[in-house]
Amino acid sequence: MFSAATYQERRTVLQTNVESGILLFLGNIENPVNFEHNPYYFRQDSTYLYYFGIQEPRIAAVVDIDEDKTIIFGDELSIDDIVWMGRQETLKEKSLKSGVQETLPYTE
Image (cartoon, rainbow, N blue to C red; front, side):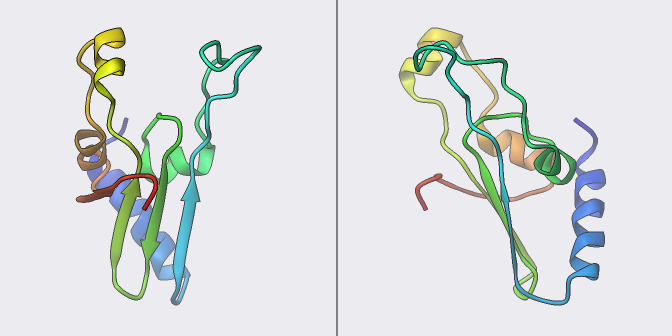
């Protein structure tokens, strides 16, 4: 990942080029090879990586130009995930590294 300032600058340039509205960025999901827990190698959407730098499946972001607000949507790891993979960086921590303060669950 680059510095938070890099991602903030990229989003600022985008916001100055778009007059108003809401920009939606959808990340990729894991695609199973033959069953749910056997996915292909995960590759995040290039646009999402460019503006946010977060390499994680099932994640989205909204940039509200009129309100000057950016929100990342995604789910934190469940206790089962933590038991299986060990302690991982939280979505909130990853979001802060890309310069975004607000995170919400993916369902919202």
